Amino acid sequence: MPQIDIVLISPIYEGNVGFTARVMKNFGFSRLVLVDPCPLGDEAKARASHAQDVLKSAEVCTIEQVFSRSHLTVATTGEVSKSICNPMRMPYFSPRELAGLLPKVKGRISILFGRENWGLNNEEIGRSDIICSIPTSPEYPILNLSHAVGVICYELAGLPRGEYLLASPLEMEHLYAHMDRYLDRIEHPRFKRANTLLMMRRILGRAQLTAREASTLHGLMRRSEWHIREHEEE
Image (cartoon, rainbow, N blue to C red):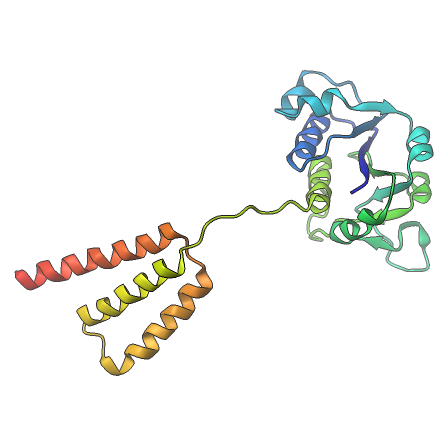
């Protein structure tokens, strides 16, 4: 992935700058650039939380500097063209599509985010190489600045979800054997047995149980068996 600058143009609220630093660090980004920012004080620091380093290292520069040093600029906008005849905001890409384009670029990429009240102006959009728009509900399409940054950073980061251990094949076979015995205990009809066990195997196979979940199912059946035994003794 090339160098990516998250560029906030004329942010109005320092809290949004702090939140932006925080969400950038959440997804592994650190290059925050501010163009004509509002004064930053205690609120920005508080909203940044554990991303003080991102906030502190934020670079302040002009929009001319951003364009002159960038190999590629991306304008983010919530308003897109309804007609291909208007090239100002067309064609545009979703954040996921953008993630497929940027790894091919060598050099510095600047992703521009506009003002909270009216976004990027036409000159800023016109000078940009790519337009990116986040799909939103028409009932309330306006995203908070830091939320928009978060969506873009999430898609570009491509972070793995992490791994966790599933129940082993042996543990699952023990569970199916217990189910077979349990069906005996509740006098499940013999002629239904094979289909019932097959369906349980299909259901639990799709569920991809962890060892703890398999153990919990064992426990539920044991508890039920205990109550059946108590009732029989009475």
